[in-house]
Image (tube, rainbow, N blue to C red):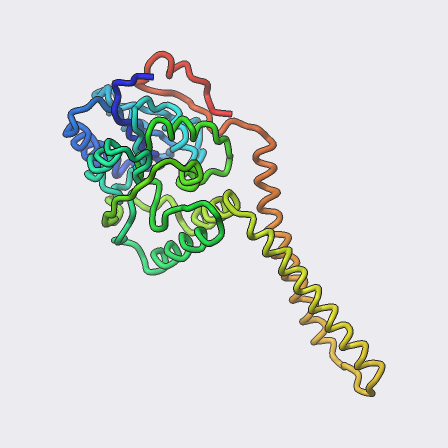
Length: 323
């Protein structure tokens, strides 16, 4: 490992042709101002636009800029993982390419790291350029996740953070397929602190996390760090079974001891549909966990690298993907 590199900056890229040049300019300006050896690692996550070609051109001009080019799209969290696998710095910063998280905060993170903190995360005190729905659901999600797990995951934080080399090495020991990086880092422990900042609106382009991907991300986070949904499903199922049994006793007593007969097919159908719906929801929760067990059991690499640029020979010869 090249110990002279003080900081590695990892930037996942997916269809970022409109913003990549500005991202590079701002990152380079910030990192040059530190006056310490550094590297910027672009991880092209199977972009379908000109992102890869622009990144290659930038790498030709700047040897501090390096590129990991995936064979296809493997996902944002996997791109971060690959960047960490290829990084060589004593500290590692993760930042998205959309410039919502300000690169200018990196020097402050490095200062906190030099004070002895192993993890320095950015905490959003305000989110500009986002809809009320996005802000509300994000706020609810972070607090719901925290209530569902015993791991102390800071609220209102994203993947924008600095981690020490020893945290990065510890993270490499975790081989989960459905990854939630910020949660795993919290699970690892280490000394952590946060820096508050105002999150800007996206510089250009469109979000890479529409509602569908956000839902999957939320499921990954919850199922990776909590068994409470399974426990809730079990308790809820037992409760409904108890209620159903009591209702059955009431129906039998009514039939035997009174002349009043329940007439309705409608009521029976409604009750059946309700309980079948609950059953399907519970099966769906169980299915989410079984699906993740299936992903882990296949044992496929987390990612496949098509090509790299500006890395040392050892890194160039690195295996195509982490098992």
